[in-house]
Image 1 (tube, protein in one colour):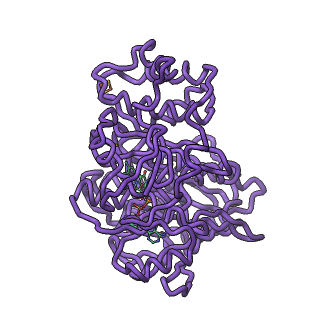
Image 2: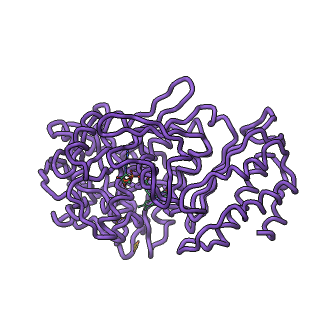
Image 3: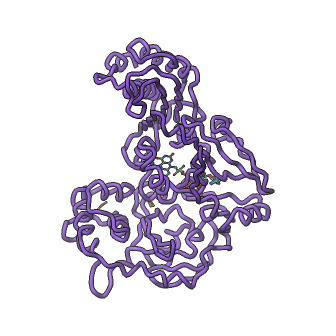
Length: 475
Ligand SMILES: Cc1cc2nc3c(=O)[nH]c(=O)nc-3n(C[C@H](O)[C@H](O)[C@H](O)COP(=O)(O)OP(=O)(O)OC[C@H]3O[C@@H](n4cnc5c(N)ncnc54)[C@H](O)[C@@H]3O)c2cc1C
Ligand code: FES
Ligand code: FES
């Protein structure tokens, strides 16, 4: 397969599980660093340019968890590809001016995250820069000078020499080596029949940790990230259809005007690099009890569209998708094609709360999603009304994501009051028996879940002085 690296076309023949970082460093491009090899530190960040509607668009990825074979037909830019004869790239220049580097180990990763923002024409806003470097850790310099360097660079006039579509025009857009990249569903099914034991890969942000953390070899991969039908977001009169290979960055853009609750959750999901690669289908198929998407999708009554390699399709309610710890109803010859979300769900009062040790780039200890409907006219903002419908779902509280129908039943027909909050808080403690693990103790998880329910109900009812003090003591 072919790709472009720093404006040079390169032919690569690598095993399926060779990461882009391993390939780059073995090729002498050692400016890209390895810190964690698990997507957590950003030292390995590179830019990947893809042709979209005749233009090259860049995004950042963690090269430590992306197989090099997935990058066929793209333009990979590493820190070595930024400076030219005229001098340093604006971002590098500003990092020097602002003293944005000390030991320098993290610096190439930060430079690439900031450079991608400049390529995308992002505005010089503190929040934008902070989001852009949310997947980059620095242990010695501190973030203030790095954010300043980003702000200064984004404020500069900049003419890109990297966005040349001509560089990508003459290379094949997809790989058919050890990483098979079908471009449509019928090609996907054919390749699944040909290689029934080969795992599917989308963003690789879960799967590739098997390689880099558990040292599992993978001989062949079927890449679903380019299957055209799985990349679509569609709309009918009643539903939104989200293709399984839609990334979080794409979801953020689509839901920005439609669901502030989901967008606020996505801002807490991994990092910019993870959101650029990770997909909704991968999150569901992985079967993790602490995945962030299932609770909100449960509240929204979402349906999964599953398809077999022989072309048979079936629909499964998301509440019935999970059968046990990391177990789902997905059969070995099936893939998730998409997720259907009823539009009416998005009109209901929805909240998502994520509890994790860090704000950015961290997995949930507890993830709670809540949907309430009431008889008030001001439903999206709450309004002190009687609850006419309720959905409550949690991640991190059991072996699977769970919906709490018993608690929902206690709420319907009631108006939020101190007695109701005490009642559901107590009932929730009895309904759940979470695990103690490295992320949180069972007691902490229960206390968090209780305070999330109380917060959601307070927000729904629009109570200006939240009814929470007594319940905190209670938890
Ligand atoms: C640093 C870091 C931070 C993270 N932060 C979060 C977080 O905040 N919240 C969270 O929930 N998760 C988080 N994750 C986990 C991960 O990013 C998500 O679960 C992501 O959605 C996985 O999607 P993917 O496309 O990368 O899946 P992949 O890794 O490509 O695949 C995951 C699994 O799903 C299967 N699969 C993929 N697509 C399909 C399909 N269409 N049909 C059937 N099977 C399929 C694969 O075979 C594999 O078994 C994080 C991961 C990392 C490394
Ligand atoms: S090496 Fe840490 S994110 Fe890749
Ligand atoms: S400069 Fe040392 S880790 Fe950032």
